[in-house]
Length: 353
Length: 262
Image (cartoon, rainbow over all chains, first blue to last red; front, top):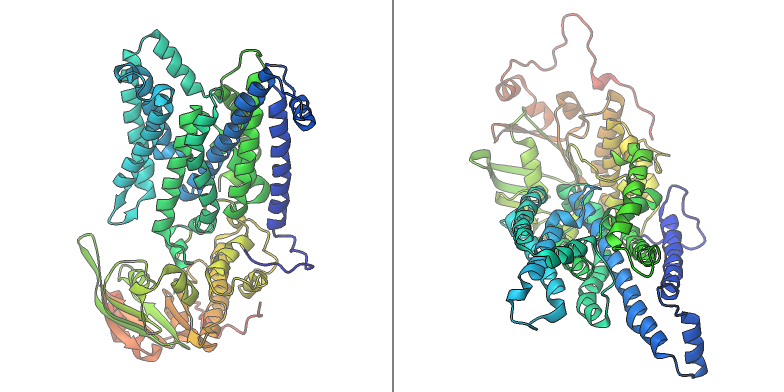
């Protein structure tokens, strides 16, 4: 960071103070949405009542305790982590591919994870019972996503240099291949399995438990902590790989860390939540329009806004058809799609850049 | 001192550079000239460390291959021919990318200073993509200047590598950019520039290396290298220097008056 001495106001062309104010505002929004998420739900549990009971040392009703601490709280944590991971992964991918439309799906994570999940749902019955239990689907999704990214990275790397263009095109080929394999499995699946895998594809935070969180959170947290360290490198990469090297960026190391980080975070996020779209594209886009493309602010703000939006989407998913709930992927697509189009049409000039 | 020995570059099956020796001294502007495809840009890319090559490049006595990217970035800046830029950065943000790579990163006021130096004062908040081609080229020059702002640091000369720095500029800005390069060399830094314009080369360069088909055909002062025989051979067309045409309009950058600074 360039130190701006206190007392001297930043020049009006400097977008960094605006980005810092945005960070503060987003942090407050996240806190507000988190509280709302704890308060809203099918059961009539009120967090205020529970906290008042706790403070007063009274016995908390079992129902309330379970609803709050075993259902809503892990779900809130999961929503925050998944939203932050998807948004940050999107921002990192866009920086890496120097393309504002890139998303983690491009490096094969989504296709591989989808194949993994479908395999687990359809072929899971063939495994010895209880080998992985409930966790077969998320574990398989994570392994699928991670493996396909590594294969793609291997294909695109020749003599220590990763070609981003090869990776992009290879991702399309690999995605088609994974899609075909998934298709075969879908063809083999029975009706119950078809229902399961369709719902998996629509995404949901409903299954969040502390156990699932404990397995997936470390990978997502690792990526969220690592991402800000990539910021300066991604800024340099906007000039192209050669110019990034000229200004002192270790380009190959940057690419390796960025790809592995994104694969881990997205793989874990998709594994526990299924197919949640649009967060990875819409969030970084919005922030770039608001406070500029500098990744040092962008990555932090993307984590906050991604978490806020996904928690909000989850609240909506729980409320609209309560006591049943909508798959969250539908909510993010219904809200994100038109919003994205609106940004495109309004700011077409800037986005063509 | 920049000292390159036996630089050999193959791209695919083609040999681009066939064992070129190249030297440049701090305090001087060294130009690389030659016809299209003679290997000028390839030589520059070998000298800046972008390209794997045979032979050895030593910058201020250190082997280029052993320097870490961020150390190298404090020592030399590069202005490429064209730099595509993803994302809507402002001019000031592009210059700041260079500033952060150098060793003057704490001097935030260098961003407006560098833009003013290239004649773009007041352009800080403008979107890079909305600038003209010439303005974009000068924003990148400001970025390179901000990266190695002081021509000498810690008793060591620093270096500017410019790949056709005036190719997309009008004559006024050509002169301005060449004067910036000249001033950098006069301040004790080293400047190596790939040049297409032989007149500007003759005006501003201290030393010239003439390339043809991957070999150094001639090297020396502009007066020694820019002569009929060498140029005619390199460019494969009969060229006569210092010969005014018999009629018609012609103009030479030499005859331009002093341009208003900044």
